[in-house]
Length: 346
Image (cartoon, rainbow, N blue to C red; front, side, top):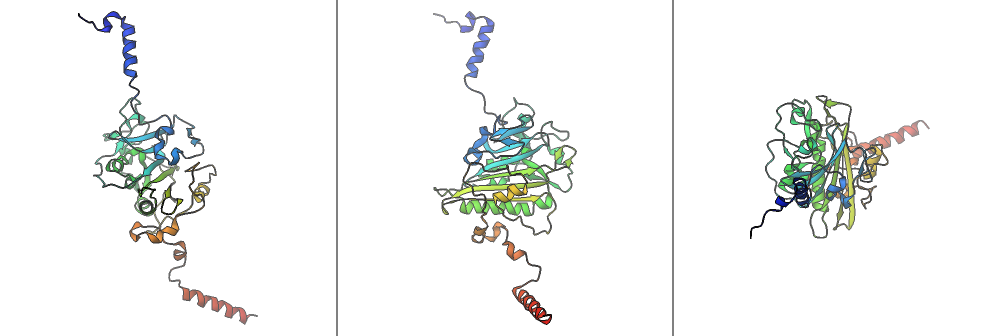
């Protein structure tokens, strides 16, 4: 007995609708540019997104046409989260879960872009930026950074925080980049990144003895632009939080710095508390880890003496606050001289 295809007995329109239903039953393909922060929440502590005034409140993006959450995807693997400002063409922040470090792979030869910012139907994976000139409408291109003078392509989420070669390579997307002053990027900011990574590797270990910490890093828009297109941040900030099974406590700290040349050249970014960060930004409603147990008023500076000097953590402030050549003996000489003068005029 011969069986004819179902389409032979159905009107053309009905058959097409049946096909559409059949293929849609497999579900939509995973997208990289998401509709909500919650779609990429695995990179946030307790899946709780930051509170950023006028941008992000209670997990809701206030201007969804301008700010786009990107589940950064490389080789079909999601690696970190970026909330991207398509108007200023820089990230608002990038967030990553730092895990047990693996051997690094080769650095990508070319910078990448997010295709779905230009075409929602494009592939979910970031792709190479092959434009030798010209610009994208909703994001920066490598051409925007050509001949940029004192500015580097500064990582918001550093490649060193990626736990796998894929994660490290995925940070070389221009949706994770801001114009950052070269001496700042390679100086105090780089030392801060190394210090935080060292600290997490040593102290942020869970009950299984595996490194686990959460980092959120952002950029505060400035008034200048590269090629009248890409905003040059006025400052950059970074905060981390983790539970230390060894210390039986939650640990957190923050750092920030003006996006200007490092002076002096041996400058360090001092480790501050989360509350210090919120006060400095002048936004009391700002919160990096809302609804979590991250301590707001303490820092991790007391642990730095236990870390290797190669970690580049800032030395104690008290040792650096004295004038050059000042010593304990100088202090006592000055003190006794002051007492002597006081008696002479009594």
